[in-house]
Amino acid sequence: MSMFGKLFGSAGKGGKAPTPQEAIQRLRETEDMLAKKQDFLEKKIDQELVTAKKNGTKNKRAALQALKRKKRYEKQLAQIDGTLSTIEFQREALENANTNTEVLKNMGYAAKAMKAAHENMDIDKVDDLMADITEQQEVAQEISDVISRPIGFGDEFDEDELMAELEELEQEELDKNLLEIEGTEDVPLPSVPSTSLPSRPAKKKEEEDEDDMADLEAWAAN
Image 1 (cartoon, helix red, strand yellow):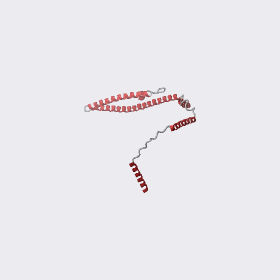
Image 2 (cartoon, rainbow, N blue to C red; image 1 turned 135 degrees about the vertical axis):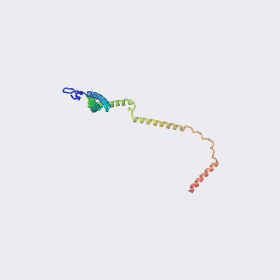
Image 3 (spheres, rainbow, N blue to C red; image 1 turned 90 degrees about the vertical axis):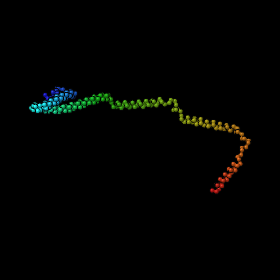
């Protein structure tokens, strides 16, 4: 069985495929395992490097063996780095796919809810309902207009008759004023004083005559 078969199990005939959440969890566990393996190999590489340095001048054979082991560990470490990159890419792809699945699932759920909400609605019935609402609003406005109109005032009187009556009242008022004016003719006027008014001073009279003559001469000269 392959490594991925061991990790995720075999989905043979009748087998159920793992869910995205289960696969993501398995990949995370694998990443943790490989990360621990990396730490172990890095420590082994450091140990073999110390051994090679220690036996470099004393025991070259031991030093060479240590360097060979170091190279093998480094190769394994590089392979694990590549494997981790692949697993990380696969995990991110699964997470995105899982997110898209949840989004589509919720959108489908919302679409079903909207369909159920509109199931008992008919566009013709909605139009009829809106028409009824508009009609009732117009009726309510007419009722408000009738209620707010003054009762018993204005409509039952003829405008021409009212104007004629007003003109009669104005004529009566004019006649009354004329009679009052005529009645004042019999009232005795105040007596004229018997004494004569004082005459203007003669000097002022002469000055006015001279001014008049000057104006006359100026007019004749023109």
